[in-house]
Image (cartoon, rainbow, N blue to C red):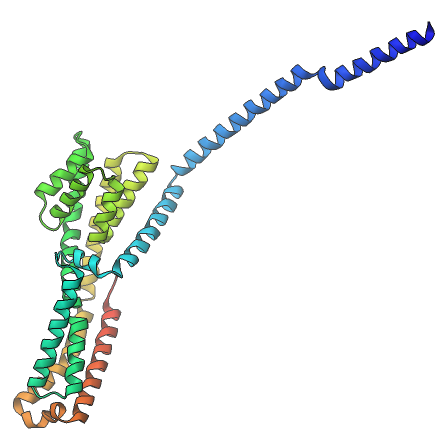
Length: 326
């Protein structure tokens, strides 16, 4: 009997230990797991709330604005490399092929005029190449800068129209239509293209990016960044655009102040740059024989070419010295 009793007690002991270590705390372990999951869910929710609150802080908004500015600068540098984009910025409807044909024709005409006026063949060819590579591009750049200046002057008024429209209950799309209908060129036609793009299914971000390719002005870049951040983080769009309008007008006032303060340097650079050609023209008018050797002799042609290169380098340096980017 004793061995049987000992065997029973040993079996009970081993079973009890197994129940304690294996299955006895099943409910408690499940409860512990549920508690851990609940605690992890709460921690995740708290982390998400902290991230959301951190995203709405001024520091986070500044970081987002800095990232948007870097991306816009990268797109602007990429857009500058293509002639097709430059033609769009200038408001010209011609293609790149037509532009190159016009440049070649202009260079050929300049070379023929140089030969007619007695220039050496090499100098006449150099003049033609310079005109072909420089004059049409300068004209396109001049037209683009003029359109961009008009666009920048009228853009704060367009932002004010959007702000008043939002405060009165109009959607942003209707505000764009008002700007496209009432604003002068080039602001009105650009917003008309934006409205047409939105009408065919393009998103607002895509439409603003295409507008920025056609008109890479800082004002439009700031507007695009404000719209992008407002779509991601939310907030009062009318207030944000109102602050943007005030900033744009302050930038314009600062630019005009800098222009007024640098007007003396600009006038000095203009006088210094125009003095050698003016003196040369006066000498040609008073004593033509004294200056004709520069055009008829190969050595005079070389000196004239060297003088032109040095003069261009000096004008470029003065322009860089008096150019202030706001």
